[in-house]
Amino acid sequence: QVQLVESGGGLVQAGGSLRLSCAASGSIFNINAMDWYRQARGKQRELVATITSDGITDYADSVKGRFTIARDNAKNTVYLQMNSLKPEDTAVYYCHARIKVWVLSAFRDYWGQGTQVTVSS
Image (cartoon, rainbow, N blue to C red; front, top):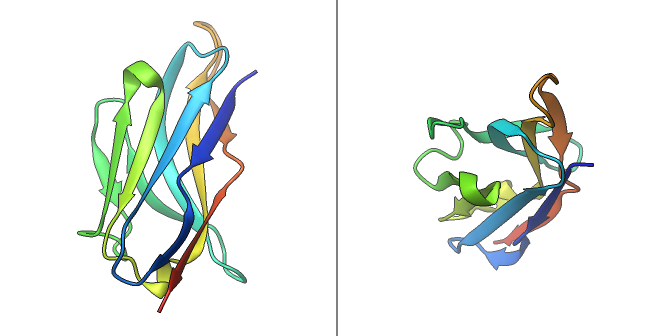
């Protein structure tokens, strides 16, 4: 059983910072890409940032220069450092990972439960 558990959300004023963490646990053989998505009320879920197992990163245009994604492969953990936060960053943030549970299995998609980030103006 694989679980992704997020932490670090909360309420912050515009211009502030937050750091999200997501730890994968359970029967894990290999983790491919790890990502952060977000979903604002009434909107579709969107990809915020992604990082490959080799550390290659990519970001949505709306967060470039403000957010930084990183991962610790030894801890099966991905982080999202969010700086210069804006009210439009308010959303539920979800961790996602492509995980293989044993050598002959295929990679499957796993999601965290989501953590609320609220940025006040």
